[in-house]
Amino acid sequence: MSSLNYAAPTTVDEAVKLLAGASGLAKVLSGGTDLLVQLRAGRLKPDLIVDTKKIPGIIGIRKGSDGGFVIGAATPGAEVEANAELNAAWPGLVEALDLIGSTQVQGRCSLAGNLCNASPAADSVPALYAAGAIAVVVGSKGRREVPVEQIPTGPGRTSLAKDEFILEFKLPPRGPRSADAYLRFIPRTEMDIAVVGCGINVTLDEKGVCTAARVALGAVSPTVIMVPEAAQILVGHTLDADTLAKLDAAAQAAAKPITDKRGTVEYRKKIAGVLARRVAAIAFDRAQGKTNGKAH
Amino acid sequence: MAKQHVTAVINGEETEFLCETQQTMLDVLRDVIGLTGSKEGCASGDCGACSVIVDGRLVCSCLMLGVEAEGKAITTIEGVADGETLHPVQQKFLEHAALQCGFCTPGLIVAAKALLDENPNPTETEARYWLAGNLCRCTGYDKVIRAVMDAAAVMRGEAAR
Image (cartoon, rainbow over all chains, first blue to last red; front, side, top):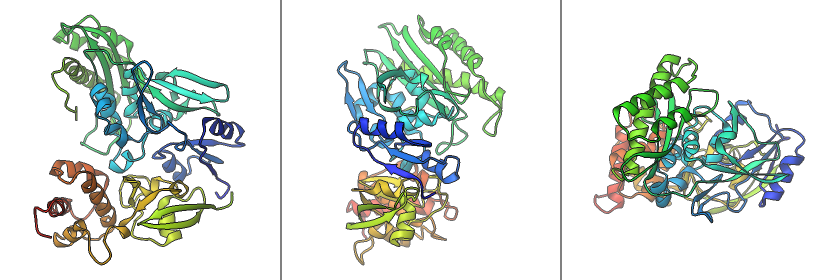
């Protein structure tokens, strides 16, 4: 074990060189709330840990040139949750990230860690997908911007190359009458892993008719999934009973879960439909200014 | 890799230590520095017995590498009291008998202190959610919450010490 090396580079170039030059497995460390558990359990035996937190900008929240929020990849959950402006614009993303673990875990856990750990049940990931977030990926070949839904490829697997890591996430500029929401189902109120999670982001017109929507489901497939069929049902409609019923059916149809200790296939499909209805209702209400309270 | 040299401020004192990469902050506190107040319950971030405050943020020291402490200010249970004077949270834990076996107590006290540093007037619900990551298998939590709420009132000057 004493062969494990550690580096805390202060520039992107230095970090990329370390990752590219590593002889064995190199792991990127953000908050470490998954990585350290995996190290301890012996599931991962890296030769090098590259701690990215000293790279300028990788922790923090700012506005990009297009007016959209930019969230540093390793920004801890507690810092995201404390940002009032981000809460107002993206309440669903904030509440999703805030659901991860305890207060202690919130002191360290990050969006990049949650995305790259690539658990199908990751709470912040359906909300990131629904938001249409873009991951700014850096590596030896330079910088590329990748829609977040292209990062996880399977449980614990991502599309990032060995020498790549995520520097920050760009959220699209927020127009009027737009809002998001996230709910997960767990059989208690805190400290559990989603049986199903659902994130929905909508834009409405003056009459409350949906003009754009993104729907994502977690814990019902090997990765978090986008459900464009469900989004298509919302577009052009208010949230009437017929639309809700079709949304429910589309979410159930898209869900391809497994049976495990958290729930059966049948149960998870049913919950996917129920959550889609509830999350859509919260997102529509928020977009119409009817509520800005937390969904939890 | 040779052991790494780390300098951090621990409980207000500049502290230097040597550690290997895979040693967690909890390993360093307990086995290198000799501060054994922080406990290892689960080693996976679920129980909160190893809670410490790093640069003002409550974290599990089992989920942080010792080498990450470089340049940080860390408060452990050993740094909560002011010399011989107990912190109000510690005093109220004693008065309310908010502990039985005591294994979770250092983590609970550090977490409660972090809550009251940030929010001097929490509701009971806020206190319960804040402490949801500190598991106690003895008390059933009610005495813990009473102690924290009472300590908060003392710190606000609304109740006697």
